[in-house]
Length: 104
Image 1 (cartoon, rainbow, N blue to C red):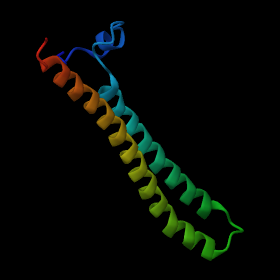
Image 2: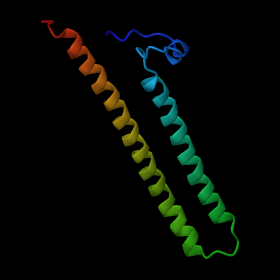
Image 3: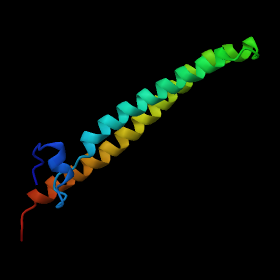
């Protein structure tokens, strides 16, 4: 089964499940997750500095630790996306191997 590149909506409504949307959608989900993680990091820093009663050491720790946390979560999101993409590609490659096996 050769995976020809058809449109997103044709793949979405392919009830025979011969065309997958996984790799098309996963890029979008990764982008959304990265933007969300960065926005939450910026929000955390902003809220930390907007709080007037907090100590300076809390603000300093937030300023140092938040980018490290944001980087960690972006790495985790990327690893998860690569994990899912590899499962898809393994399945695709196994199907190609099965299709090329000689019939008895």
